[in-house]
Length: 257
Image (tube, rainbow, N blue to C red; front, side, top):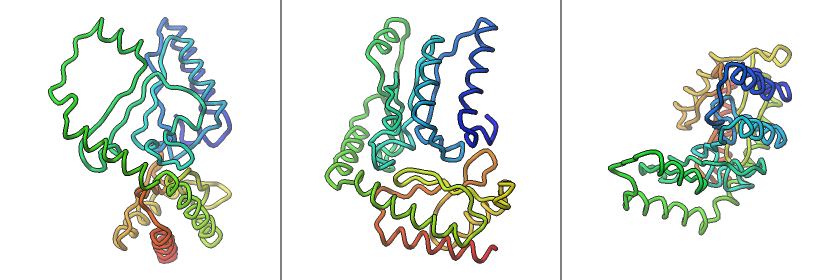
């Protein structure tokens, strides 16, 4: 999709409709629609609930399934919900799980409707040497226990609200900060050449990421133009860490301006 697909309301949905219509005209059916709950690689966007529901309905009507990718938006990351897809009030056919589930230990998972798995088992032969590794399963179970017992979903919501306020305050002092998007402890800060044209400040974003790294704070850049600062702290982030991150970002932006 074009880098501005999520800036104009419904534009990405129109593009999806066009693709589905073109496929139908060529006698093709979609296999699946796979969506990250926060569209993190697209610049951290969160489309309206109704748009996500419409997209899923269209794909299902055309014969495809909806796969929710929870590798980045799941496991209490968004604060208000445990899963990113829950924010859109739509139930996926399949859910892919990964990195956060092991907190550094290599583990991944898949959850799917029983009807799909039964059909897969009837039609396909599948073998995986490491499927169900007990050590990985124990690590993942321990992570889930910690998220629950230490109330990290609540922490993601509280500290995310704190971080959001800090970022908006910084935007009042730094004109290069454009749109600020996110939920819980997951934010995207768009860096722009100016707020009139909204031209992407790609080179600046790279310098900011490196400047933050040199100062001891790790963030990254994302989006089609790599001009969106991707801020995704660990769920154990405290108010002190929020202040450290925002102060460091303020200092780095000041030095680069």
